[in-house]
Image 1 (spheres, rainbow, N blue to C red):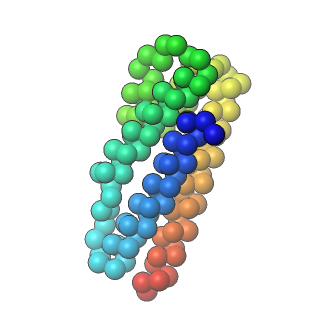
Image 2 (cartoon, rainbow, N blue to C red):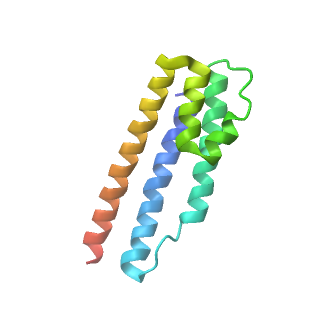
Length: 121
């Protein structure tokens, strides 16, 4: 498995873990957003690393500021990286993969929150 795919899976698992922790503290102790800052920094690091690894795997020698752009503003930086470096066809595939991963993350977060809420109410 490619390193860029491992980074995506790691980010997905971190969302699940953060959802468990946040949901537990919300429903058991009435505290909100315990993991917001550390998880945001971790996801920024994952976006940066994904862009670097993906560029290296596809033999892109000059990434410029795209890794930093992906880390700071991921929802704009990732599609911009895809369209700029790979053109419309492959860039659209990268954008579709980004949207699919985002959709799967939202579904998993909702399922985890629903499960933890059911356990504590």
